[in-house]
Image (tube, rainbow, N blue to C red; front, side, top):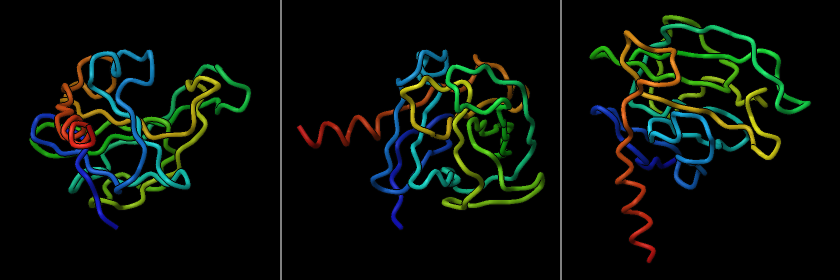
Length: 158
């Protein structure tokens, strides 16, 4: 399986399987409006690690709203330690990993769920942000994504 780079933030490259759908601006969530978050629509809802390596730092669950009838009542949040005081924050994925586990690019780590946060027209996806490790939870404060790799691919098709 080949991987393509879709964005970079603070020296961390986000890579996904070639041909996988993704979006930077598909949501009213502040992270998407500020280009600090990306949603990835993995094949068969199998979320794969989009960075070279990471260690599971924390898994927590919190109450979710119900914007759709089939949405889960609880929302999973998984943090991956990236080193250099950075974490990868993941939402909308039911984690199948344990705290302390080390993963590498393309490793399966959970199943994308129908989150209570998703609008009725949204498909299941993984939400990713690269954040300072001292501020891992908030909606604001993630590193801005450099989306030049994606823009360059689009320009090549014009």
